[in-house]
Length: 380
Image (cartoon, rainbow, N blue to C red; front, side, top):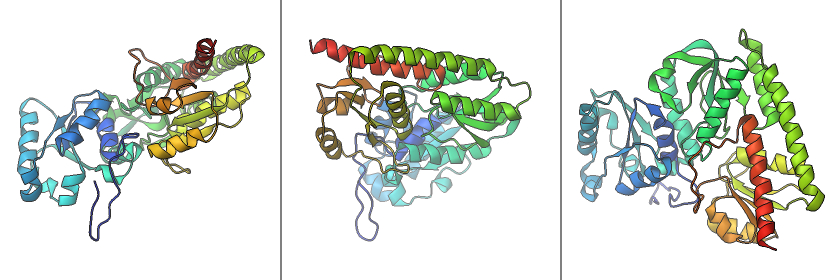
């Protein structure tokens, strides 16, 4: 969508990475007890619905309602959801209603509704996730000594594995878990913890103090030692020992690969945190040169989500390993490929695969080595 006149607005047509509306919906849809309504057209509903794989509702506004107002339709949708037994409803505003400037709070007066103004033109999925988190987490109550697990997002293909691995590691270190952000009961926010650690640092959940990241062995060790300093009874030593054993396994596997193969020349197209994680593995354990990184989201480095720019960058050199999505796999069909960003078409994945924690590091190294070895078999 593009605005005109004195209100210029960026386009919201990029299929490579989701918009702010989708990010907001992904945060909210992770909470049981909270029904999520997309206030917008059918397209604004079906796009996040296809990616999030969670129950969503839509107002499905029509052309005439863009002119005469869509508040009545929205109230009708929310009221119907409440009549079906929903305890709480969150409404995520899309581009067209946001530009119309309707007063949704007045339209929904008297209903237990959380309004999230996160139209797609505000930014990427990470921005929308943060907007929704900022709004909902204002209601949280910090009541326990422990940690919340943040960075869990239904858009992330590794979210379920990250969640299970984070909980396993924290239990091993005798660190209580407060809320899981965001895949938990809504009532979990009433007994949140003082510190939040992140399984995926690109999905920020501002609750309590930031306690670091569980992504990568070095970050994991620092994060657990920091948390243990302030939590009575915590003991990170079993996890630290397992980290040391894990690193030995990784070194052995990579050294075996390098006896017969050269270090890979890699390109990574993924979220900034995951891209940096894989880049460190490649450089540290496989002796690779610093990979080309085309980040999906903006951090200190601008995002690269224009498909023509991605194609140009990937075709500017010769890469034998590609970590990214199906979009990039089409550009470099002869490179070894591992899917670490959605979509990953042509594959069925039902199990819980982590990138965070100890098992996440092992899984990441497996992805790299197996992709390279499988591609070499094809080339024989």
